[in-house]
Image (cartoon, rainbow, N blue to C red; front, side, top):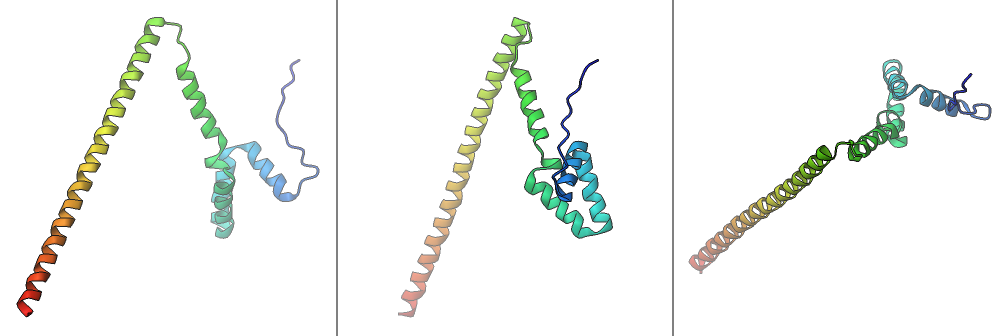
Length: 142
């Protein structure tokens, strides 16, 4: 006989809100989303309150489980596959892609700088033309 450890919170000293939260947590993301939708259907302020609570407390859609699975996936990709030729190819490809990304980001930065310089030069030309026009008008008036 095997014993399975389940994370059931002790609800004897909890209020109704804490018990409800613990129950929804035990059911998962779907329960939070369903409670929010039902709240909107029956009385919209309840649904809105649940939405704000989910965002504020990082429950439901914004919970830790999403972040854990992504980091777990990244860590899994860095492990050795057991095939040294593939691992070398993967490492070389990743480093090449990182270099290409850095080059592309540098290109985008140069492009932004050129655009900024062009816009600034255009602004300065328009300003100089406006100042020259104002000087001409003042000299004609005098």
